[in-house]
Length: 388
Image (tube, rainbow, N blue to C red; front, side, top):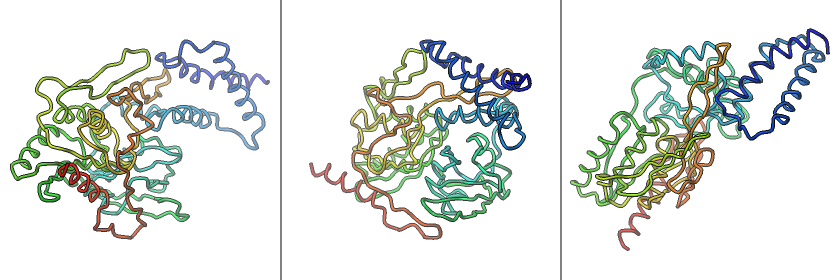
């Protein structure tokens, strides 16, 4: 290997080595020889690329790609952040009010987890599972969820263009959105059937548990003896807010378990004064149900307080934090995750519904059907419970 190649290998290997040991995230039980074996392979790859690739290599670009791939391989919420992104995280500045109303994950490209009710994306017909191949002409193939989220926020009235793929469609659709701060409320209630209240939780926003308790009391006064909680495509809000809301329905028992690498498991349990809402419940879920909504649903289902109806949830219950690297870049790394009340894995697996009902797949430009088979099934389940 030439001196130049060795210097390049040394320069690009140092951040990889730092990444491998920072924070103690790689098990101490792994043998040193195994770790060095992987670094030797990496050294060989860098040497082969720099000496044999058909054209000159931008080693900085290659290095960023390697680090990004290493983080992306952990889970969709972990990512490698470049120095300018790290500075934005550290500033903790709120995002602009204008938003497309989209929650993102990564699966090769950026992919939509959920679309907020009444948002620009919702009005345009975007939905859970759609791939965003480009934002304003920039490919999302190498774009982190962090950067994608910022690209979908701006001053209200700002326009953003999305190149979207749905399902197995061969041709992408270009969707132009105007960012807006207006969306449907995060909590809405109505009557679904005689004696049945319908509660739509679009986001676990501020004071959600308090407002939810108030709205449920109002439904009860209006004669609602049972409740349908709709958490389909609900992905906004911190997980602890989902746990707070679960306390309204669970009088005793474990709500969730949190585990981190090298830390004792932390158990969250219902306590004195919890469980004030005793009405029979069913919860509507789908592949866009994630985060706080997912932990909330797991808490109620795990304590036999509600049946889950619909589709399997996403499996997104980890907590991330920033780990800075010496060159100013950093890792947005999942450092803890929530488990179900029984201690079963939730992150990366999701919740399986008690009663599976598939939602219809829609093509672009087709209005959603007025019928709601998931809600219809929920009402049938509650009817059977009442008869029993």
